[in-house]
Length: 158
Image (cartoon, rainbow, N blue to C red; front, side):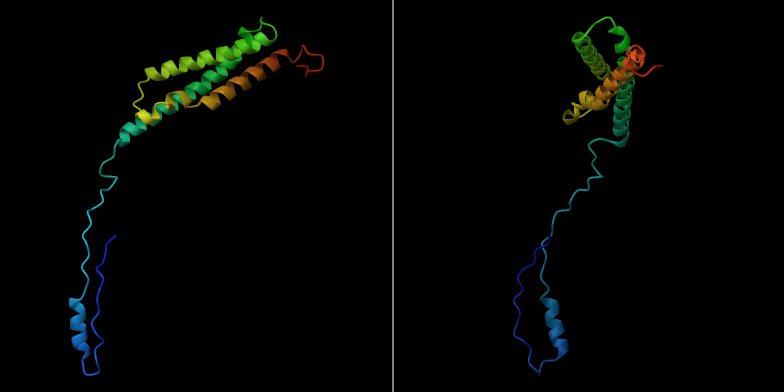
């Protein structure tokens, strides 16, 4: 913002003074403003150029959809792989399998060589984690229910 010097006004002109003289005096009393430094425009100096950002977004999008697909596949596989295990151990084995597959996706993501700034390094782990967990559990429960629905006496007969 510009700062103005405080203007000290002269005495009010009398009836004898002409309007022209008061106008001339007013032109000389215009306050001076301080010159401010120009503010640099953010568009001039982008820290990340547009092509690098789109490449990063494309790779993060691919990572997200890879995790979604693996969640559905791993959830269905868990139903069949852990069929022989009984009771509580089946549940923990499936959850351990889910974590192992997720760690595998982290290793794959590091192999994708995402050029992320240090503030966004956690995106490799957090990108799509909620979708992964819920889709894995949903697929595992639905496939298990459909597979064993006919064997339960009160269940749905297929």
